[in-house]
Image (cartoon, rainbow, N blue to C red; front, top):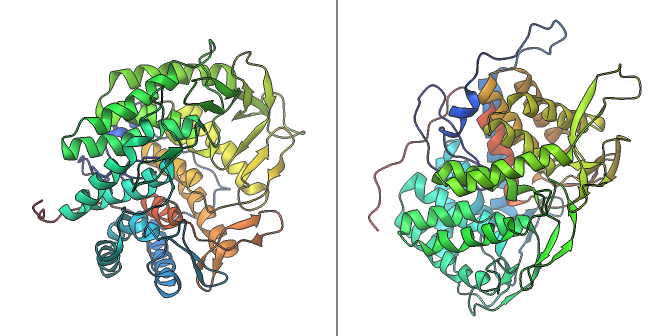
Length: 472
């Protein structure tokens, strides 16, 4: 769930760790190598995208969404925009939206809004709370948000909060296998949830690793790294992991293997850990895992019933991790992270093909469903919780290829969000993409990721300047 933002034309790295967000130009150095764009002249192509105008529109929508949060949910975790009420994950607020979205505010130049968020964080945020939090969500939203804001501002108070949180989360790794429990009480250290999944085990290392670097405390890297290795060593002979595992026994509870929810970002973090930290072991694990995915999960099917022979779409489906038997032809919004990871790995062609499949999924009903049966092209789970993954992949592909096709995609995504998800008080999830029935929640990651990736996709020039550091 960590992503990387490049500063076009600058050749400089922007080192800001975050939940599928901002961060490191160097990542695209390898992915971009290999020749000119594949963009071709096409008279049917939509009108060229005015990148500056689109970036400005995205910025205004972030301002609009943030002000709705300020008006109706200030100090709480998230906004319910339809009922114009607040939503907290626990008995006390952890200021999830301000923490998660602050780097997006900074990136888009919404300085006053970012300063209000920072003031709220310093006034209200405390982790000395007798509550049970989900380690995965707190890591990617809160720990990642604090670290990115610290790296963008140099405010040492943010790093102290991040270190306090990281220390309180460490008990999750006190299992017999070293793989983390799902939940921890940040006040007492009590853990629970021995049955977990590869995403919740493998999607910790970038945030914790960055905390280790900044605090010079190796424990923050060593413990999540051990957890990743323990998970990897339990892969099947085919090189695949399953959907659920018991961290106390080390035994698989579910053998369903795919790249969707519960597994997705485990693969993402293997590659990004290798790049961000120069970790050769993570690079080796990524390469082996990538081969297994291509060999056993990749599925090429006709684009439609009338498609000519050889006109195939690429998907990644579901198999039994032990036998390789195909068990489902499902792909959805969370799976759509994979084109971006493939392009970071240097495979532009496979990334391009898979992104086209993702785009077909989006256009089936004008907005993507949570899960699709790609062989029948029928919706399996109809919700849309404002997810960012398909936008993220379009961003990476555009930065690697400069093909305006991905700007066209981004415009399609943005316009659909405005039409179907915008309310008079922020943006809301959809319960059903077919009927467009609305939910009532604006997740923190919509501001922190979905809008941020749209902005990064369109922005003609992106630069992040850090002011003079505040001494710790």
